[in-house]
Amino acid sequence: MAAVFLRSNMTYPFRLGATSYVVPADILTNVRYLAGKVLDVELVLFEVDDGQNNLPGKAEIAELAAIARGCDLTYTVHLPLDLRLADDGFPRHASLDKARRVIDGTLALNPWAYVLHLDGKAVLNLSDPESLLRWRDQAVRALELVGQWAGGPRRLAVENLEGYPPDFYDPVLERIAVSRTVDVGHLWLDGCDPVAYLKNALLRTRVIHIHGIEGRDHRSLAKAPREKLKAVLDELVRSEYRGVVTLEVFSEVDFLTSCAAVKAVMHADMPSPEQ
Image 1: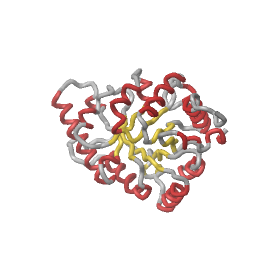
Image 2: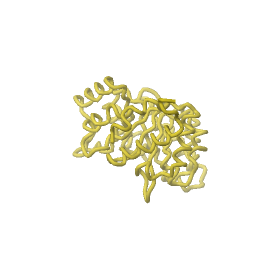
Image 3: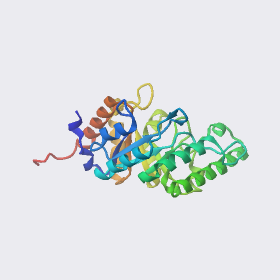
Image 4: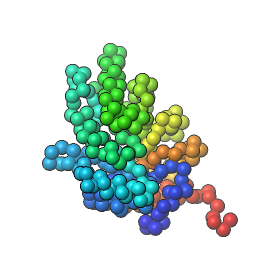
């Protein structure tokens, strides 16, 4: 089945990507499997505690860099925790400590983007203006700090989350020149129109996550209604989006069937080579 889509993404305007957990193995094995099939791999680095550390070591980073050089591959890096300052407003918080460890360990890969969540649960349902303003100030400060470690705020890509209003992060994003990650699956899950969202967000978007919904998210795009998937991909083509589109699924079957779904939509209206 892999031969069906092998390097077919070269005809797409965007860089089709996958996660580092497609086959049941470590990150390096997954990247070896995906090299030549996609143009970006999202390194999912959620386990960076002592005893549960999937952050690649120096030798693995060197091999990941060599693989990337050999096949026009880039990496996006998903930071492990929702970023926030400590409760007293000072930088020392586990999410920032872990973010720095991940960034320091992966900067040699020159990542396309560092994907991150902002922790806004404490104020999500509050109407108190003072609390909202304090949270926004702290969110901007957290992004400033992490942006310094990453080589500039544009390297950071703030992701929209399910259960949050679509414009929840806008007051923060207006104050700092970070990029965005648009998670189409999260928008589908919340009943929002991702095409309308993309029209407003795409100029600052470095990464798009896309996955199907069937009871839960991160399922194969074969589970997404074809017309909804086509509307999103048509908008990316119309806008000449040149960033990364990550198939954010976590099994080989879901990856293969998602690739097939994207190819079916993208190539449906293309003339055959004989025409």
